[in-house]
Length: 100
Image 1 (spheres, rainbow, N blue to C red):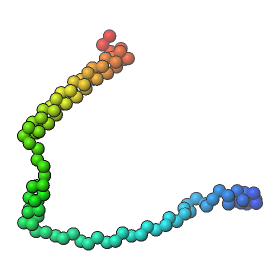
Image 2 (cartoon, one colour):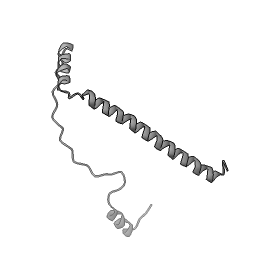
Image 3 (cartoon, rainbow, N blue to C red):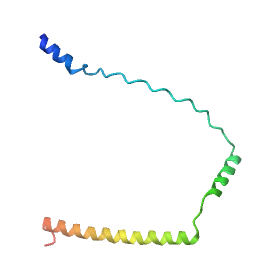
Image 4 (tube, rainbow, N blue to C red):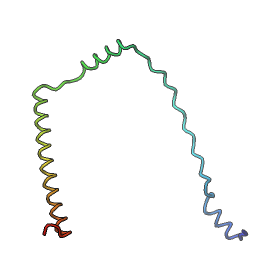
């Protein structure tokens, strides 16, 4: 396919041809990490026990209050979804003429 000078200038002004993306600069490679130290089962269980001692466990009162709050939120959410379901059922019934 032959092209004239104007077409060549327009092609040059458009930029590089398709498929030739500019080369991105290479990122430096991160330093290699040393291999993790392997421990035996007895040492592992000792570390687990030490970490468990650091945990702040909730009191019986905090656990009871939180449990009651969860049950209350379940009841509130279920009532909300029942109400929304009934409203949507009524609306769809009106639109489709079912139940009239």
